[in-house]
Image (cartoon, rainbow, N blue to C red; front, side, top):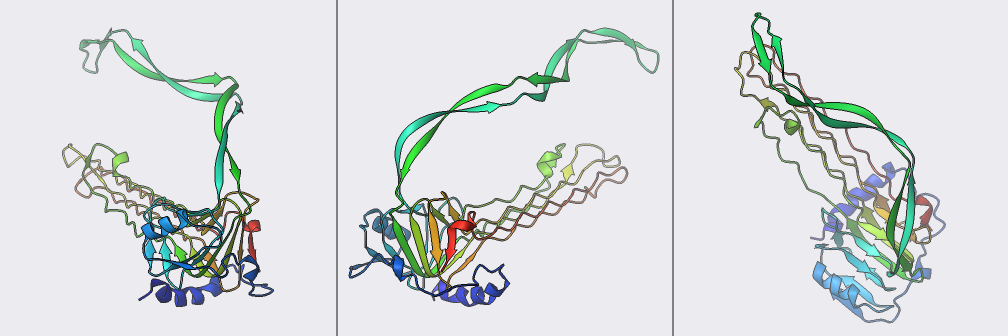
Length: 336
């Protein structure tokens, strides 16, 4: 069964809950962006076949998906083609993979400067303390050996100029890519492992890890991407990991065993990231474009319950991440 068909009905029901960019359409016509007329079709059934097809595509080619696929690497569409999802779906993987639309070419390396203002920093340094004699609480005279001691002091860092370099590219904004009839999404399914309560004398190691924030499934770097009857869903942020608690080497009667904090949830990703103001995405009213939901913060752990007196403190819950909107540059996401 096609994944797109299984999910589509739920997306259409949920569409009414979006802060709707879907209202105010004048028509359902994206035919002005048709780039593949009277062309042979190229059928693809896997991520590798899609990569080969787009790498060798010529302007006007018509590529048709014949299966649900999961990308195992970035796919870069640089030619003016039509990608017909054919009611199937592209899952853009849980890591850094993206479907990248548009074309750029390296031109040169540019030197530039960053001027940093003065700032005050706390700086640590080790200072030597000579040995000396002292009298302890029982009146016994003892010798304390020389040792290093860490001290902190405020230091004013003067203004300075950083010399940097960056790559400069030429962008091709005459590229038009049409995508239709399916779904492009990123589902993480990347669960945090349960926190183990196995860290001795270390509070930090008992805190849960923060959830990941993933990249958007569709990135547009140049030209125009025209969407017809396409659902594009950003990735939900990963949930934060729950905290664990300390195990201590101490006698159980006298305490410790602090609970670790839960990790913060990751942010949801955009559905579409438009890299430059010169690029744009146009979509008709049959499209649903939605950013990812926030990841939930992990739960703080209770203190180690095995201490009878003076037990440690409980950890705090992690903070939820932030849900994301459909596009980083809404002014360049145009509904027609």
